[in-house]
Image 1 (cartoon, chains in turn orange, yellow):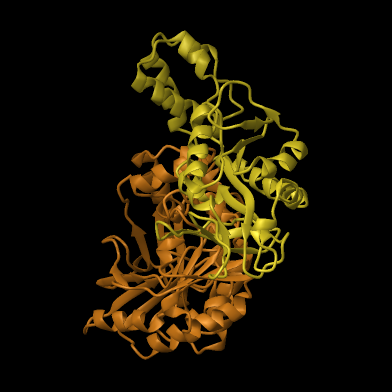
Image 2 (cartoon, rainbow over the protein chains, first blue to last red; image 1 turned 180 degrees about the horizontal axis):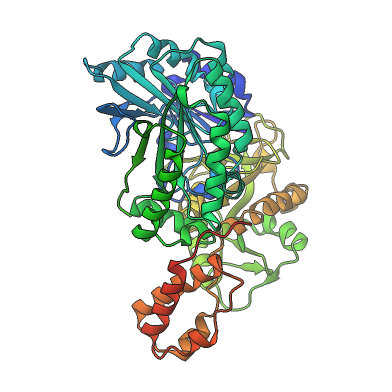
Length: 320
Length: 269
């Protein structure tokens, strides 16, 4: 890591000092607010992805947001929070590249404010809190120490369910801690040919399945996220084989939930992605509803061969 | 194409020689030198001139693909040794009380520092930053023309408390830059290596289609989009088949492409 930018407000925060020690940057550059170096007009996401910097900042204002209505795994109240913006992986379908102009990692070090905001949302009903919306929940764990702070917090608040969304196999911290029922480790999975084609820098399917097995054995709830389903050549055979491979390994009894979703992006995000990556065939695919629905239905039918219907959630279309 | 902007002719000399640049003919507001990949402009001293030179270069080359900008020059510093080369990671415009942060996506091949752009020559160097007179003007304009990751400022320390600017002359300045030509070439190579990521995609067979059918402006836009998609999704399939060329109008040709593309899946390599 070459540069780490640090907001003046968190310069002496113990978490800042810890992260800097781990990153060992060649240069620590003080900034007033992270907006000075993140998401500036004329920054280029694809270029930044070639060498992202790290920004340590304080999150102000809202810390916890409601999820879109169709997003959930069974709870009535669903929220997401982002202590980290951006991700070390480089998935061609990732909406972050159309949402931000910058690929640098922003770590908000004021974890306590996130935890207080989560407590504010809690009532007598169960609520699910999704982490990993604006970045992978586990991939940066060795640098951020997110889990070591948030797992004990959620363990103490059983009405707050935590979903950690990831493609990473960085599970050491999870294996160190004792599992608890209101935490779901949700892995995004795709057929290996699609991982190779679209999910640059991510672990292969076999490694993700190994990690899942280890976590299941340690008692952790596992979620499977088949999202996005991609309309690729030989779709039916790729996905049939894929589901077969996954459920050879996964213990359905201990499966918390599975979800299914198509490749869907809000129009402005898609437009920006096409501007940044005019050469990407994925973005040239037809977005015809009928075709997408047909693929989703096929996957749903396949999945019902392996899992209890009540465990499968389908994320509905957003406007395309 | 990458544009290099310098304030002084003495700063330009070693670059003109090393990069084998030729003077651009014609009557120009600023002296301009070029080869196939680089354009160099000599702006004169001060941030207003530096900004104006960038605008001028962009304006007269607007049909060419300019992807990056590099400001090269000398600067003063309280303690840095004369001859120290530096890339700049923060530029402060003293007059406007504003800052810019050049964005690095390659590992800088030399040390980096903060540059303070001042309006009058500085001899005390109290701030501990690199003092110059152009970077802020250059960056303010270049950042409107290219992605921030493609804009950099490179300074060689020419004076400090022990060796004041009054001792500088043309020969000394030339040598300061000449000593770092190799480093500058490295920076330019890094920047050139990024161009592929941002170069626009060409549209295959556009001219052929436009000759064959009459498209309105809106239809031409649709056609470009469909031809690009064809190129991405089925590059091995023959576009100008009998079926396609037998379409009678622009509308029919567009429908043909649309219908074909609708049924394609993502090709896997």
